Image (tube, rainbow, N blue to C red):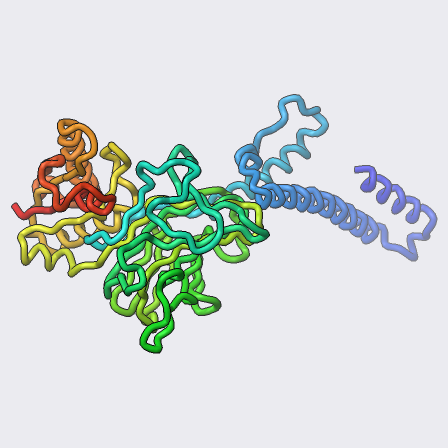
Length: 434
Protein backbone atom coordinates (compact mmCIF):
# COMPACT_ATOMS: atom_id res chain seq x y z
CA UNK A 1 0.00 0.00 0.00
CA UNK A 2 2.93 2.37 0.61
CA UNK A 3 3.92 2.11 -3.07
CA UNK A 4 0.38 3.00 -4.10
CA UNK A 5 0.29 6.23 -2.00
CA UNK A 6 3.80 7.28 -3.12
CA UNK A 7 2.74 6.88 -6.75
CA UNK A 8 -0.41 8.97 -6.22
CA UNK A 9 1.56 11.71 -4.39
CA UNK A 10 4.08 11.87 -7.22
CA UNK A 11 1.33 12.31 -9.78
CA UNK A 12 -0.30 15.11 -7.82
CA UNK A 13 3.07 16.91 -7.65
CA UNK A 14 3.42 16.54 -11.40
CA UNK A 15 -0.03 18.03 -11.91
CA UNK A 16 0.75 20.96 -9.61
CA UNK A 17 3.84 21.95 -11.63
CA UNK A 18 2.27 21.58 -15.07
CA UNK A 19 -0.26 23.86 -16.75
CA UNK A 20 -3.71 22.50 -17.58
CA UNK A 21 -3.07 23.47 -21.20
CA UNK A 22 -0.31 20.87 -21.41
CA UNK A 23 -1.91 17.89 -19.53
CA UNK A 24 -5.53 16.86 -19.36
CA UNK A 25 -6.38 16.35 -15.68
CA UNK A 26 -8.87 13.50 -16.24
CA UNK A 27 -6.41 11.62 -18.43
CA UNK A 28 -3.71 11.90 -15.75
CA UNK A 29 -6.03 10.59 -13.04
CA UNK A 30 -7.05 7.68 -15.28
CA UNK A 31 -3.39 6.74 -15.80
CA UNK A 32 -2.71 7.09 -12.08
CA UNK A 33 -5.53 4.68 -11.25
CA UNK A 34 -4.44 2.21 -13.95
CA UNK A 35 -0.80 2.18 -12.77
CA UNK A 36 -1.86 1.77 -9.16
CA UNK A 37 -4.05 -1.22 -10.05
CA UNK A 38 -1.18 -2.83 -11.95
CA UNK A 39 1.09 -2.46 -8.91
CA UNK A 40 -1.52 -4.10 -6.66
CA UNK A 41 -2.11 -6.96 -9.13
CA UNK A 42 1.62 -7.54 -9.45
CA UNK A 43 2.01 -7.86 -5.67
CA UNK A 44 -0.91 -10.31 -5.43
CA UNK A 45 0.51 -12.40 -8.28
CA UNK A 46 3.91 -12.53 -6.58
CA UNK A 47 2.31 -13.79 -3.40
CA UNK A 48 0.31 -16.39 -5.36
CA UNK A 49 3.42 -17.57 -7.20
CA UNK A 50 5.28 -18.00 -3.92
CA UNK A 51 2.38 -19.93 -2.46
CA UNK A 52 2.12 -22.34 -5.38
CA UNK A 53 5.91 -22.79 -5.50
CA UNK A 54 5.95 -23.72 -1.82
CA UNK A 55 3.11 -26.21 -2.32
CA UNK A 56 4.85 -27.78 -5.30
CA UNK A 57 8.10 -28.10 -3.38
CA UNK A 58 6.32 -29.88 -0.56
CA UNK A 59 4.57 -32.29 -2.89
CA UNK A 60 7.78 -33.11 -4.73
CA UNK A 61 9.52 -33.79 -1.42
CA UNK A 62 6.85 -36.30 -0.54
CA UNK A 63 5.41 -34.20 2.28
CA UNK A 64 1.84 -35.44 2.13
CA UNK A 65 1.05 -33.71 5.39
CA UNK A 66 1.66 -30.40 3.72
CA UNK A 67 -1.14 -31.10 1.28
CA UNK A 68 -3.43 -32.46 4.01
CA UNK A 69 -2.86 -29.34 6.09
CA UNK A 70 -3.65 -26.91 3.27
CA UNK A 71 -6.49 -24.51 4.10
CA UNK A 72 -5.83 -24.46 7.89
CA UNK A 73 -5.40 -20.94 9.26
CA UNK A 74 -3.14 -19.99 12.09
CA UNK A 75 -5.36 -19.40 15.10
CA UNK A 76 -3.45 -16.42 16.53
CA UNK A 77 -2.96 -14.40 13.33
CA UNK A 78 -3.01 -10.62 13.64
CA UNK A 79 -6.10 -8.86 12.29
CA UNK A 80 -3.98 -6.83 9.89
CA UNK A 81 -2.83 -10.08 8.22
CA UNK A 82 -6.31 -11.61 7.83
CA UNK A 83 -7.02 -10.46 4.28
CA UNK A 84 -3.58 -11.48 3.06
CA UNK A 85 -3.83 -14.85 4.88
CA UNK A 86 -7.27 -15.45 3.33
CA UNK A 87 -5.92 -14.92 -0.18
CA UNK A 88 -3.02 -17.28 0.44
CA UNK A 89 -5.21 -19.99 1.95
CA UNK A 90 -7.72 -19.78 -0.91
CA UNK A 91 -4.96 -20.24 -3.47
CA UNK A 92 -3.49 -23.16 -1.52
CA UNK A 93 -6.90 -24.79 -1.22
CA UNK A 94 -7.38 -24.51 -4.99
CA UNK A 95 -4.00 -26.16 -5.57
CA UNK A 96 -4.86 -28.89 -3.07
CA UNK A 97 -8.10 -29.62 -4.92
CA UNK A 98 -6.17 -29.95 -8.19
CA UNK A 99 -3.69 -32.39 -6.63
CA UNK A 100 -6.50 -34.47 -5.10
CA UNK A 101 -8.47 -34.53 -8.35
CA UNK A 102 -5.38 -35.72 -10.24
CA UNK A 103 -4.86 -38.77 -8.01
CA UNK A 104 -6.41 -41.86 -9.63
CA UNK A 105 -8.70 -44.03 -7.54
CA UNK A 106 -8.74 -47.82 -7.66
CA UNK A 107 -12.05 -49.17 -8.93
CA UNK A 108 -11.30 -52.68 -10.31
CA UNK A 109 -14.73 -52.53 -11.99
CA UNK A 110 -13.28 -53.13 -15.48
CA UNK A 111 -10.31 -55.25 -14.47
CA UNK A 112 -10.11 -58.09 -17.02
CA UNK A 113 -7.02 -60.04 -15.94
CA UNK A 114 -7.90 -63.71 -15.37
CA UNK A 115 -5.03 -65.81 -13.97
CA UNK A 116 -4.17 -69.29 -15.13
CA UNK A 117 -5.87 -72.17 -13.33
CA UNK A 118 -2.94 -74.61 -13.01
CA UNK A 119 -0.27 -73.27 -10.68
CA UNK A 120 3.33 -73.82 -11.82
CA UNK A 121 5.09 -71.85 -9.07
CA UNK A 122 3.81 -70.30 -5.84
CA UNK A 123 5.64 -68.33 -3.15
CA UNK A 124 3.64 -66.47 -0.52
CA UNK A 125 6.65 -66.48 1.85
CA UNK A 126 4.87 -68.84 4.22
CA UNK A 127 7.21 -70.30 6.86
CA UNK A 128 10.25 -68.32 5.73
CA UNK A 129 12.87 -67.27 8.31
CA UNK A 130 14.02 -63.66 8.49
CA UNK A 131 17.56 -63.11 7.30
CA UNK A 132 17.71 -66.34 5.29
CA UNK A 133 17.78 -66.56 1.51
CA UNK A 134 14.28 -67.25 0.09
CA UNK A 135 13.94 -71.05 -0.07
CA UNK A 136 11.87 -71.07 -3.26
CA UNK A 137 14.43 -69.11 -5.29
CA UNK A 138 17.95 -69.29 -6.70
CA UNK A 139 20.32 -66.33 -6.77
CA UNK A 140 21.60 -64.80 -10.00
CA UNK A 141 23.11 -61.60 -8.61
CA UNK A 142 22.88 -59.14 -5.75
CA UNK A 143 22.01 -59.63 -2.09
CA UNK A 144 18.52 -60.86 -1.23
CA UNK A 145 16.92 -62.31 1.90
CA UNK A 146 13.64 -62.86 3.72
CA UNK A 147 12.37 -60.05 5.89
CA UNK A 148 9.38 -58.72 7.79
CA UNK A 149 7.99 -55.54 6.27
CA UNK A 150 4.61 -53.90 6.66
CA UNK A 151 3.70 -56.73 9.08
CA UNK A 152 4.18 -59.35 6.36
CA UNK A 153 6.84 -61.77 5.17
CA UNK A 154 8.52 -60.41 2.04
CA UNK A 155 11.48 -60.96 -0.27
CA UNK A 156 13.95 -58.19 0.48
CA UNK A 157 16.21 -56.82 -2.28
CA UNK A 158 19.04 -55.25 -0.32
CA UNK A 159 21.14 -52.33 -1.53
CA UNK A 160 24.36 -54.10 -2.47
CA UNK A 161 26.26 -51.58 -4.60
CA UNK A 162 26.00 -48.10 -6.04
CA UNK A 163 22.86 -49.07 -7.95
CA UNK A 164 21.31 -51.54 -5.52
CA UNK A 165 19.09 -54.45 -6.49
CA UNK A 166 19.59 -58.04 -7.58
CA UNK A 167 18.16 -60.89 -9.65
CA UNK A 168 16.52 -64.21 -8.67
CA UNK A 169 14.97 -67.15 -10.52
CA UNK A 170 12.35 -69.61 -9.22
CA UNK A 171 13.47 -73.05 -8.07
CA UNK A 172 11.71 -75.25 -10.60
CA UNK A 173 12.44 -78.83 -11.59
CA UNK A 174 14.67 -78.92 -14.70
CA UNK A 175 14.96 -75.12 -14.92
CA UNK A 176 17.24 -75.41 -17.96
CA UNK A 177 14.18 -76.46 -19.98
CA UNK A 178 11.37 -74.28 -21.29
CA UNK A 179 8.87 -74.57 -18.45
CA UNK A 180 6.42 -71.91 -19.63
CA UNK A 181 3.41 -73.13 -21.66
CA UNK A 182 1.87 -71.29 -24.59
CA UNK A 183 -0.54 -69.65 -22.18
CA UNK A 184 0.64 -68.47 -18.79
CA UNK A 185 0.24 -65.72 -16.20
CA UNK A 186 2.62 -64.11 -13.70
CA UNK A 187 1.56 -62.16 -10.61
CA UNK A 188 3.32 -60.51 -7.68
CA UNK A 189 3.05 -57.55 -5.32
CA UNK A 190 5.86 -54.99 -5.46
CA UNK A 191 6.58 -52.17 -3.04
CA UNK A 192 7.57 -48.76 -4.39
CA UNK A 193 9.12 -46.28 -1.98
CA UNK A 194 9.13 -42.51 -2.21
CA UNK A 195 12.14 -42.46 -4.55
CA UNK A 196 12.62 -44.06 -7.94
CA UNK A 197 13.01 -47.82 -8.30
CA UNK A 198 12.20 -50.45 -10.91
CA UNK A 199 11.22 -54.11 -10.96
CA UNK A 200 12.10 -56.24 -13.99
CA UNK A 201 10.49 -59.43 -15.28
CA UNK A 202 12.78 -61.26 -17.73
CA UNK A 203 11.24 -63.94 -19.96
CA UNK A 204 13.93 -66.55 -19.37
CA UNK A 205 15.76 -68.18 -16.49
CA UNK A 206 18.87 -66.00 -16.69
CA UNK A 207 20.94 -68.50 -14.70
CA UNK A 208 20.07 -71.92 -16.12
CA UNK A 209 18.71 -71.55 -19.63
CA UNK A 210 21.53 -71.50 -22.14
CA UNK A 211 21.71 -71.22 -25.90
CA UNK A 212 20.16 -74.23 -27.63
CA UNK A 213 19.39 -75.08 -31.27
CA UNK A 214 21.01 -71.85 -32.42
CA UNK A 215 18.32 -69.94 -30.54
CA UNK A 216 19.57 -67.57 -27.88
CA UNK A 217 17.60 -67.46 -24.67
CA UNK A 218 15.55 -64.24 -24.49
CA UNK A 219 17.28 -63.03 -21.33
CA UNK A 220 17.53 -59.53 -22.77
CA UNK A 221 13.75 -59.33 -23.16
CA UNK A 222 12.00 -57.72 -20.24
CA UNK A 223 9.21 -55.61 -18.86
CA UNK A 224 10.23 -52.91 -16.43
CA UNK A 225 7.69 -51.71 -13.87
CA UNK A 226 8.06 -48.30 -12.27
CA UNK A 227 5.76 -46.89 -9.63
CA UNK A 228 3.22 -45.57 -12.12
CA UNK A 229 3.90 -47.31 -15.40
CA UNK A 230 5.55 -50.04 -17.41
CA UNK A 231 7.98 -50.32 -20.29
CA UNK A 232 8.53 -53.22 -22.68
CA UNK A 233 12.26 -53.32 -23.40
CA UNK A 234 13.81 -49.99 -24.15
CA UNK A 235 11.80 -47.51 -26.20
CA UNK A 236 9.53 -50.21 -27.70
CA UNK A 237 6.43 -49.51 -25.66
CA UNK A 238 6.01 -47.41 -22.56
CA UNK A 239 2.74 -46.50 -20.89
CA UNK A 240 1.66 -45.03 -17.59
CA UNK A 241 -0.94 -45.83 -15.01
CA UNK A 242 -4.14 -43.80 -15.39
CA UNK A 243 -3.63 -40.20 -14.32
CA UNK A 244 0.17 -40.23 -14.49
CA UNK A 245 2.93 -39.35 -16.94
CA UNK A 246 6.71 -39.12 -16.88
CA UNK A 247 6.41 -35.45 -15.94
CA UNK A 248 4.01 -36.04 -13.04
CA UNK A 249 5.72 -36.60 -9.67
CA UNK A 250 4.42 -39.16 -7.22
CA UNK A 251 6.36 -39.57 -3.99
CA UNK A 252 3.75 -41.68 -2.22
CA UNK A 253 5.09 -45.02 -1.01
CA UNK A 254 2.75 -47.85 -2.01
CA UNK A 255 2.27 -51.51 -2.88
CA UNK A 256 1.30 -52.31 -6.47
CA UNK A 257 -0.17 -55.57 -7.76
CA UNK A 258 1.63 -56.56 -10.98
CA UNK A 259 0.08 -59.05 -13.42
CA UNK A 260 1.23 -60.38 -16.80
CA UNK A 261 -0.80 -62.51 -19.20
CA UNK A 262 0.72 -64.31 -22.21
CA UNK A 263 -1.40 -66.09 -24.83
CA UNK A 264 0.59 -67.83 -27.61
CA UNK A 265 2.11 -64.59 -28.91
CA UNK A 266 0.20 -61.71 -27.29
CA UNK A 267 1.19 -60.19 -23.96
CA UNK A 268 -0.68 -57.89 -21.59
CA UNK A 269 0.64 -56.27 -18.44
CA UNK A 270 -1.39 -54.80 -15.58
CA UNK A 271 -0.67 -52.51 -12.67
CA UNK A 272 -3.33 -52.68 -9.98
CA UNK A 273 -6.68 -52.25 -11.75
CA UNK A 274 -5.36 -50.89 -15.06
CA UNK A 275 -3.91 -52.56 -18.15
CA UNK A 276 -0.77 -50.60 -19.01
CA UNK A 277 0.77 -52.67 -21.83
CA UNK A 278 -0.82 -54.56 -24.71
CA UNK A 279 1.66 -56.20 -27.09
CA UNK A 280 -0.09 -58.15 -29.88
CA UNK A 281 2.99 -60.07 -31.01
CA UNK A 282 5.87 -60.62 -28.62
CA UNK A 283 8.00 -62.07 -31.42
CA UNK A 284 9.63 -64.91 -29.47
CA UNK A 285 8.84 -67.74 -27.09
CA UNK A 286 9.26 -67.03 -23.36
CA UNK A 287 11.09 -69.94 -21.73
CA UNK A 288 11.23 -69.00 -18.04
CA UNK A 289 11.01 -66.16 -15.55
CA UNK A 290 13.60 -64.05 -13.75
CA UNK A 291 12.62 -61.39 -11.23
CA UNK A 292 14.97 -58.46 -10.72
CA UNK A 293 15.08 -55.17 -8.89
CA UNK A 294 17.06 -52.06 -9.76
CA UNK A 295 17.26 -48.90 -7.71
CA UNK A 296 18.35 -45.96 -9.81
CA UNK A 297 18.97 -43.80 -6.73
CA UNK A 298 21.17 -46.29 -4.90
CA UNK A 299 19.46 -45.66 -1.56
CA UNK A 300 16.10 -47.45 -1.73
CA UNK A 301 15.46 -51.15 -1.14
CA UNK A 302 12.83 -53.30 -2.84
CA UNK A 303 10.23 -55.70 -1.45
CA UNK A 304 8.23 -58.38 -3.27
CA UNK A 305 5.58 -60.83 -2.06
CA UNK A 306 2.92 -63.27 -3.29
CA UNK A 307 4.61 -64.46 -6.48
CA UNK A 308 2.63 -66.85 -8.67
CA UNK A 309 3.21 -68.37 -12.11
CA UNK A 310 0.26 -70.28 -13.54
CA UNK A 311 -0.59 -72.17 -16.70
CA UNK A 312 -3.41 -70.72 -18.75
CA UNK A 313 -6.37 -72.87 -19.71
CA UNK A 314 -9.29 -72.95 -22.10
CA UNK A 315 -11.90 -70.25 -21.34
CA UNK A 316 -13.89 -70.89 -18.19
CA UNK A 317 -17.17 -71.03 -20.10
CA UNK A 318 -15.82 -73.85 -22.28
CA UNK A 319 -14.82 -75.70 -19.12
CA UNK A 320 -18.36 -75.27 -17.82
CA UNK A 321 -19.89 -76.62 -21.03
CA UNK A 322 -17.66 -79.70 -20.81
CA UNK A 323 -17.78 -80.45 -17.09
CA UNK A 324 -20.87 -78.69 -15.77
CA UNK A 325 -18.61 -76.56 -13.57
CA UNK A 326 -15.38 -74.61 -13.64
CA UNK A 327 -12.66 -74.14 -11.05
CA UNK A 328 -10.67 -70.98 -10.37
CA UNK A 329 -7.76 -70.11 -8.11
CA UNK A 330 -7.98 -66.50 -9.28
CA UNK A 331 -10.31 -65.44 -6.48
CA UNK A 332 -7.97 -64.74 -3.57
CA UNK A 333 -8.60 -63.89 0.05
CA UNK A 334 -6.65 -62.38 2.92
CA UNK A 335 -4.98 -65.02 5.09
CA UNK A 336 -7.53 -66.82 7.30
CA UNK A 337 -10.21 -64.32 6.31
CA UNK A 338 -13.16 -64.11 3.94
CA UNK A 339 -12.23 -60.65 2.65
CA UNK A 340 -11.66 -60.79 -1.10
CA UNK A 341 -8.41 -59.33 -2.44
CA UNK A 342 -9.02 -56.61 -5.04
CA UNK A 343 -7.04 -58.38 -7.78
CA UNK A 344 -9.70 -61.12 -7.67
CA UNK A 345 -12.06 -58.79 -9.50
CA UNK A 346 -10.69 -59.85 -12.88
CA UNK A 347 -12.08 -63.36 -12.37
CA UNK A 348 -15.29 -62.14 -10.71
CA UNK A 349 -15.91 -59.67 -13.54
CA UNK A 350 -15.39 -62.50 -16.03
CA UNK A 351 -18.02 -64.69 -14.34
CA UNK A 352 -20.43 -61.77 -14.02
CA UNK A 353 -20.16 -61.10 -17.75
CA UNK A 354 -20.64 -64.81 -18.46
CA UNK A 355 -23.87 -64.85 -16.45
CA UNK A 356 -25.02 -61.59 -18.02
CA UNK A 357 -24.47 -62.99 -21.52
CA UNK A 358 -26.16 -66.28 -20.58
CA UNK A 359 -29.16 -65.42 -18.36
CA UNK A 360 -30.09 -69.09 -18.06
CA UNK A 361 -27.02 -69.84 -15.96
CA UNK A 362 -27.33 -70.46 -12.22
CA UNK A 363 -24.39 -71.41 -10.01
CA UNK A 364 -23.61 -72.90 -6.66
CA UNK A 365 -20.51 -71.02 -5.50
CA UNK A 366 -18.41 -73.48 -3.48
CA UNK A 367 -15.37 -72.63 -1.37
CA UNK A 368 -12.39 -74.89 -0.63
CA UNK A 369 -9.32 -74.48 1.58
CA UNK A 370 -5.98 -76.21 2.03
CA UNK A 371 -5.36 -78.48 5.02
CA UNK A 372 -3.50 -76.00 7.21
CA UNK A 373 -5.22 -75.27 10.50
CA UNK A 374 -8.25 -76.75 12.24
CA UNK A 375 -10.77 -78.77 10.22
CA UNK A 376 -13.81 -77.05 11.72
CA UNK A 377 -12.24 -73.59 11.24
CA UNK A 378 -11.46 -74.39 7.61
CA UNK A 379 -15.07 -75.44 7.06
CA UNK A 380 -16.39 -72.16 8.41
CA UNK A 381 -13.79 -70.23 6.43
CA UNK A 382 -14.78 -71.96 3.17
CA UNK A 383 -18.45 -71.18 3.80
CA UNK A 384 -17.73 -67.53 4.57
CA UNK A 385 -15.56 -67.16 1.47
CA UNK A 386 -18.19 -68.66 -0.81
CA UNK A 387 -20.79 -66.31 0.63
CA UNK A 388 -18.43 -63.34 0.12
CA UNK A 389 -18.13 -64.21 -3.58
CA UNK A 390 -21.92 -64.40 -3.92
CA UNK A 391 -22.24 -60.99 -2.30
CA UNK A 392 -19.62 -59.50 -4.63
CA UNK A 393 -21.44 -60.87 -7.68
CA UNK A 394 -24.87 -59.65 -6.57
CA UNK A 395 -23.32 -56.26 -5.92
CA UNK A 396 -22.06 -56.37 -9.53
CA UNK A 397 -25.61 -56.90 -10.81
CA UNK A 398 -26.33 -60.65 -10.75
CA UNK A 399 -29.69 -61.53 -9.22
CA UNK A 400 -29.40 -63.30 -5.86
CA UNK A 401 -31.83 -66.03 -6.95
CA UNK A 402 -29.25 -67.24 -9.50
CA UNK A 403 -26.60 -67.97 -6.88
CA UNK A 404 -26.19 -70.14 -3.82
CA UNK A 405 -23.13 -70.69 -1.63
CA UNK A 406 -21.57 -73.73 -0.01
CA UNK A 407 -18.30 -74.51 1.78
CA UNK A 408 -16.33 -77.77 1.73
CA UNK A 409 -13.33 -76.72 3.80
CA UNK A 410 -10.37 -79.06 3.28
CA UNK A 411 -12.50 -82.14 2.59
CA UNK A 412 -12.13 -82.21 -1.22
CA UNK A 413 -8.48 -81.50 -2.16
CA UNK A 414 -7.55 -81.44 -5.83
CA UNK A 415 -3.98 -82.40 -5.07
CA UNK A 416 -1.67 -83.08 -2.11
CA UNK A 417 -1.14 -80.31 0.43
CA UNK A 418 2.61 -80.96 0.73
CA UNK A 419 3.88 -78.10 -1.47
CA UNK A 420 3.04 -74.37 -1.75
CA UNK A 421 1.75 -75.03 -5.27
CA UNK A 422 -0.50 -77.86 -4.03
CA UNK A 423 -1.90 -75.75 -1.21
CA UNK A 424 -2.56 -72.86 -3.59
CA UNK A 425 -4.33 -75.21 -6.01
CA UNK A 426 -6.59 -76.44 -3.19
CA UNK A 427 -7.48 -72.90 -2.10
CA UNK A 428 -10.05 -72.49 -4.82
CA UNK A 429 -13.58 -71.49 -5.69
CA UNK A 430 -15.78 -73.70 -7.87
CA UNK A 431 -18.84 -72.61 -9.84
CA UNK A 432 -21.16 -75.59 -10.16
CA UNK A 433 -24.26 -75.63 -12.38
CA UNK A 434 -27.62 -75.76 -10.56
